[in-house]
Length: 87
Image (cartoon, rainbow, N blue to C red):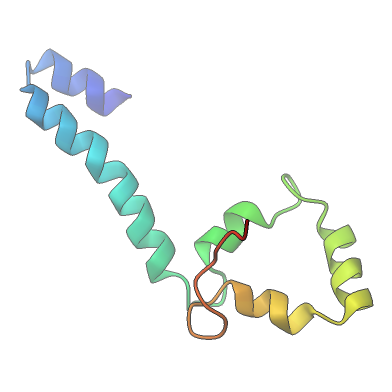
């Protein structure tokens, strides 16, 4: 928001705003992809946390079904494919 305000005060061209609007999601995507093979991938940290998901319940279900390895592989493009949604 501060960046948009600063660009507005500087009377920047609409093209500058377009680049800013495209750059922010692009930087986010690069960060997600760059952290996929780290110990704590960004996408997992953002989505699989206790403020969004009941983590103990998920952990219990994974243990009950014996699917922990498959779940862990979901977050890595080398072990199980890119995260995807099935219809």
